[in-house]
Length: 81
Image (tube, rainbow, N blue to C red):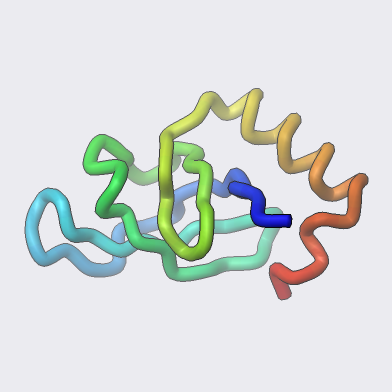
């Protein structure tokens, strides 16, 4: 199953312009490089939903934490490492 996973945007690591950016996102301590092209409004410390290496939306911190916990309990985060 393909799911979007919430993570915290730690830093903007590359920026061609305001739209084409890359960022470092933490998923419960596991850090990944993510495309931010679909969320030009995202800023450092925001929580984003990530699907196949691209942030697809900015979400509320509480919602992100609840979703991450449920996915963790279901064993859906095993492929992060």
